[in-house]
Structures are given as C-alpha cells and as structure tokens.
Length: 269
Ligand SMILES: Nc1ncnc2c1ncn2[C@@H]1O[C@H](COP(=O)(O)OP(=O)(O)OP(=O)(O)O)[C@@H](O)[C@H]1O
Ligand SMILES: [Mg+2]
Image (tube, rainbow, N blue to C red; front, side):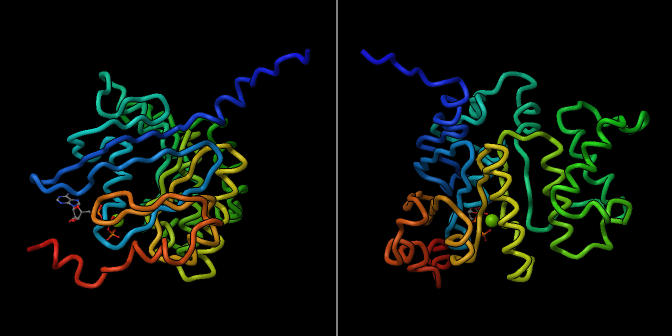
C-alpha cells in the first residue's frame, strides 16, 4: 500500500483562508451598507474588489481592520476574531495588515526612506522617534525600496516624487510591517493607465512571492481583468459576484454596474 502523504504545515497554511468573512452586516446610522457579505482570501492570491460607487468596497476593507461598525456576522483575519477582539489585539491586527490608499498618505516633507521606516512603527506602541531607527530597520527599508524599484530616491522628499513613485513608497511602507495581508483601496485611481498597470503588477508580484493575499478595490474593469486571480463584486452592499478572473464572462460582470447611473438617487429615497 502506498504511504499516505500528509500535507506539510506550509501546504496547510496555503489551503486555509487568511481572511474569512461570513454574513457580515455593517450599518451606519441604522442604514445597512453591507448585508450578508461572504469573502475568503487565500495566501498568494490577488483579488480585485469591484462595485459601483457607494456599493461598500471601502466599508468592507475597513471591516477587516476594525474600522467599521460591524452589526452582525463574523470576520476573521490572520487568526483574529475582528468582532470580538481581546484587549490590545486591535493594534496587533492592524500591525499585521498592510494598507495602501488612493492618496498614498505619505508625509510629504519627510524623505522617502523615513516614510518607509514609519511602517516599522506599527504595533510598536506609542511612537518614540527619539531613539531613531535601528540600522537593521534602515537596511530593511532600503532593501524594500530596492524591491519596489526606487532605491535611488531614498533621500528625496516624498513630495518630490511622481504619483506612481509615491505609491511605490507607500507599498514599501506597508511591506515594512511584514504584513500577513495587504488591503489596497483604489491604489491606482490617481495614476495614469501605464503607472496603474505597473503598480498593480507590483502588488500581484508581492502576493505571489510573499504568499500573502492582496485585496485591491478598483474602478476600472480592464485593470481588474488584467491583474487579478479572482474577482469579487459588491452591489448595494451585497456580494453578488465571486469567481476566478479567467472564468468570468461579460454578462456576470455587467451585473455590477447595471444600474450605476441613478443608483445613488434610488437609495437616497
Ligand atoms: N462613515 C460613514 N458614515 C455614514 N455612512 C457611511 C460612512 N462610510 C460609508 N458610508 C456609506 O456607506 C455606503 C458605502 O460606502 P463605501 O465608501 O464603502 O463605498 P465604496 O464602494 O467604497 O464607494 P467608492 O467607489 O465611491 O469609493 C455609502 O452609501 C456611504 O454613504
Ligand atoms: Mg471607496
């Protein structure tokens, strides 16, 4: 009889979702903005989150790091039960999830290197800049700048960089946290199409090489089709689409934007 091949710990880790959302409900002022959302994110995959404006993409991302008022369901991220965090656990959770934003959120007057170093402050407790950063931190930040292709800008003020370069700095800053997952909310909405491609390529490379899930919300469908392994889609706060990018057809995707025009008006009444 052939010996039974048990999966290794690494294989098991890969098979288990790092993020698992079930029946998520979020309400602002008693208005339900997410309703019964289901989502799994697995290590190593780049998942595009689509949906018309106001469909709840940012709210879903916020729910994963405890920034949204969850009123029902369960949210598990990197082993944390986000709806029921122990004391001090919220800080740990946020230190384990790297975030990238549309407007980069860098400190403009600080150097590129210093901006990346601030990523190391996550989870470090009250910020203490007095002692400065260790040489190990600096070496790691330089390595990450090299990885995102802008090591030559390390000493420049962040504000002097182009949008695409600034987003690379923000990605290096997120990596400085040694994140177990990355959430990127419209990371390329302020970039021209060519730069958008290169930033999304970088994020996908990180997902694959570091074996972490990257969830990226996007407005532009072709970008999602070109740069994701899987697409999930929200409509009026409900997850109405989930599938492997290569297998989705135009009709399935069209559902997301069917009533985009006037959809906001409809819900306001
Ligand atoms: N802090 C808040 N207070 C009240 N309502 C909110 C708040 N944040 C979001 N909402 C509402 O929740 C709904 C979903 O908003 P959200 O920002 O998640 O949408 P989105 O899909 O990210 O949209 P966009 O593509 O425009 O960024 C909207 O109706 C919005 O008005
Ligand atoms: Mg948004």
